[in-house]
Amino acid sequence: MAQQSESEQDQFKRLLIFFAALIAVLLLWTKLFPPPKSAAPPAPAPAVASAPAAAAASVPAVAPASSAPPAAPAIQGEKEESYILAAGLSTVTLSNRGAVATSWKLDGSVENGKTPVELVHPFSLEQKSFPLAVGGIPEADALNAALWKCAASGPRLDCEYAAGALRAKKSLVLHDDFLHELSLSVIRDDAPAGATLGWGPGFGHELTQTERRSRFSATKGNSLPAGAGMAKPLSLPGKGNATGRPGVLAADTAGVFVWYGIDDNFYGALFVPADNAPRAITIATTEHALPAPEPGAKAPDPEKLVTVAAPFSAGRLFVGPKRYDDLKRLGFSLQRAAEFDSVVPGVGPITIGLYRALLWLSARLGSWGLAIIVLTLLFRLALFPVTYKSMVNMRSMQVRMKAIQPKIDAVKQKFKKRGLDGMAEQNEELNALYKKHGINPLGGVAGCLPLLVQMPLFFGFFKLLSKVIDMKGHGFLHVHDLTAADPWLLFPILSGLFQFISSWQSSRTIADRFQRIYFTLMPLGFAFFFLFYPAGLSLYWAVSNLFTIGQQKLINAAGDRKAAEEKAKGKLKDAPAEKRAD
View (tube, rainbow, N blue to C red):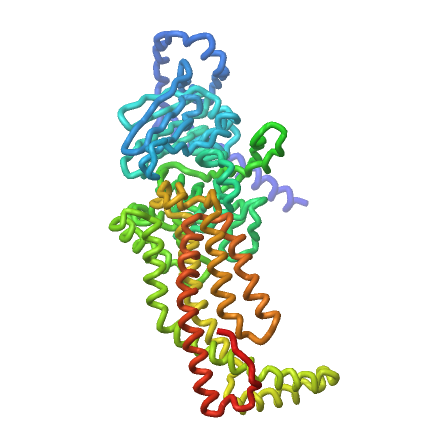
């Protein structure tokens, strides 16, 4: 017990010594490092003239807190005003209510016309929702409804707004090449708020009756994000696109994008962020009810208008025609927006080559219609040697095959009752029959070679003639615009008629009845297809099939001569005596 008492006394002594030393250190510290004297209170600030009653009411007062610095003074416009900026072929009207674009017009000369091209959809006026509106933050609606303080100088407009802890600035500088400067800064509590900028709802004018009938106008107002230099149409509700298809982006996509925007077949509004930071592109669709074409008529289906937005602080904004070479000169992979690429491999370079060839021909012939005709004939003439040889061989094979058709039918009838069990023996016997008469049953595949060679050219023309802005507004014969559907349906009818004649010429020697029906009726499907597509495309197909009619006449004569020579040599000695079609 005595030892425990002595231990407790020692601990108590050490504790007293520790506290005494601590007090001594504190006293010494205050003696060596005295605190600074208090600064004199600041003089009262001069009184600020009171703002108008309406303006004061729109900005809620914020009670000062002793622990926070005073809020920045409010900045806003006194009344609603519009500003008109112009540069090159662009004329833009902006409102200080939200600092948005209420009109964005291009001179009519961009599409060989006199009427200015309006790129702000009229639905924006109805909804009071305009391009360049702020989004993505809780204060977006308030910012877009507020009156900003703006100042214009030539092609430049600077706007700013401040209320409480929120400060916003927006600037736009127009340039002659349609690639403009754009910046946005929204600060909340001295930190970026992460606001978005975009375009919509919709893009361009409201579709006309003719454009609604034309299938190629169905992508009006499509959104085009571009990631890593790639541009793909977005899959939208009601567009019939499969969201799972490779290359088609979902409605909300995050990543590093070279640009993002909205477009139609001929014009685009493309935002090019200055940074390479990842961003999420937000897509929204709005249904716009359309009026009936006439009293008592059924109203057309509503338009699906797109709004596209993404975080944006500074960069460029392209608003103009999607001319491939001009976009390529501007950089930023903007030429991808021309959509000359295709899901078919190799068609992109073909489309670009066709585009430049048509530009060259139209400049020298003075007509896009004549340029399409001449280019089509040049390509068909270039393919003629390959086409002629393979088609003559196919014609000769068809004549020989028709000559032994009764023998083929007899073999098939012989093994018909045995079903699948006799299939192997039937094939052996048919192959022996073909070999005896020098017939290659797969020889008809070679006849498809000319068509396969032409398919990339067809897809290239299809991509080109539905999207090339240079041809817009240029007519030929009765057509006022080769990029629109034929109003008289003349070119689609001629293309179907010429294809029917050429198919009838080539199918008369086909022994199989169902194949003859297929080749005869196929042109009707093509004619229906061309009813809804650009007149320039149906003009190309009509000229191509007219060339085929003359070509098939030569092929039939040469094929029949070859078959006659082979018969004289004894290759067709077992053929029944019957008259073959010319």
